Amino acid sequence: MPLFAHPQYATQHDKMTRQPIASLVIELGLPTTVSMLVTNVYNIVDTAFVGQINTSASGATGVVFGLMAILQAVGFMFGHGSGSNISRQLGAEHPYRARQFSATAFYTSLLAGTAIGVFGLAFLDPLCRLLGSTGTILPYARAYAAFILLAAPAMVTSCVMNNILRYEGHATFAMVGLVSGGVLNILGDAVFIFGFDMGIAGAGLSTMLSQYISAGILLAPFLRGKTQASFALRYFPLRQAAMTADEAAEQAATHEKTPGPALLWELLELIVLTGLPSLVRQGLGSISTMLLNGQAGLYGDAAIAAMSIVARVTNFLFCVGLGIGQGFQPVSAYNYGARIYSRVRSAFFVTLGIGTGMMVVFAAGGYALAGPIVTFLRDDPEVVAIGVPALRIECVALVTFSVSVCANMLFQSIGLAGRATFLSALRSGACFIPVLLVLSQLFGLTGIMVAQPVADVLAALISVPFLVGFFRHLPQDGVA
Image (tube, rainbow, N blue to C red; front, side, top):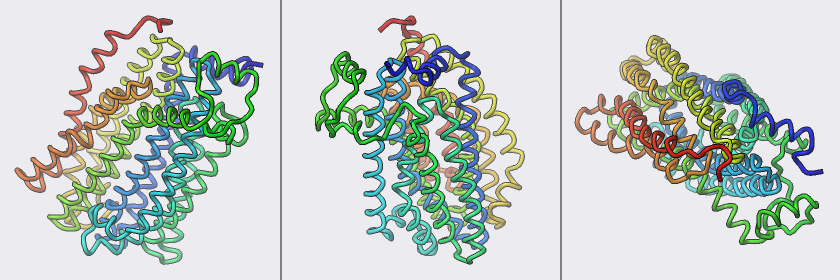
């Protein structure tokens, strides 16, 4: 029986290509938004728990945040790169090819995460200094980072599994795995930091354990056959395995290479090119965090702690726009693969409207409650004096965030990697880095505080012409 004649898969295909756009985007976006909110609640709670130790420990969370961004960059590269290709292949009804993408991404990301963990542990002190540690922050950053590096394989592969589930339209499965990990992390923080008096090392241990448990939960749907993607070794492209009649027919019809090194490199190239925007976005985020910590460090540990708190709170606020945007990606990719371009257009504008509306509400709340939020996370007068105005300025700029996010996710989901990579480089790199360096020289600490908001607005403005050009030339439905 052909795969899409199977009721389970036919229903999913029909859902992705026929369900009303607004309800489909919300259905896929809300679980992702909940997942990201819980993850960021953990980040904020983690910052609050660690902040009770001292200001240097609080600064260490900002330093290690850069390390976590590196791991997420690699994971999201493989995850978005494979997920986009998988979704488009499923939209075109090529399930065997989709499974080759999923197996390739899983095993190569597992290898990459392990390599980063081993390398990072071997050069732990230099890595922490590179990430922005001062002499007083280093002992705390080192204790925290060691556990994060031990968790690297789980963190990277979790990003892959999460994104494959989302791109298939199984956002609820992804939500269960991520939310479970976040809740366990919060509980673990309380137990290890205070119950066992482990200090910041307890926060690291809690993160490591919860990451492995979360990875196991995310893996379960694949092992139970609930997904069209598969991590079975028979689909890894180096392995010549017996194919079903339907798989052999698909391979012949699509002129795919037979399994071997050439096919592996072909799939990896497509995964990396498609996932490059995520690597650039997250990687530049890590570099930007290093630079921001370096510039803020000139004004003491309080400045690093304050900007770290602003980054955590901002991530919590814009994860709403990001979550809805990630609900849009599978809709866009699947229908682009199926050549139903009108649904791609509709999905984009529905997502932009919902995301912008929610960002306005959340940004207004963040602006109004900036004082209590920063004080709750670190009740230090120096930290509060820097963090409150910085957070309020960032909230004003957040209303433009959905424009740049939706543009980037549109181009990445449909495989236009060049445009997606360029746009992904704007917020944390091409705009932020020069703005930070210039404004910090001109206005000192105030320039550091306003650098990210200025970069956010510039990124949104630059994205608009790309969107106009794309929709002007989008083909009619059914056109190759």
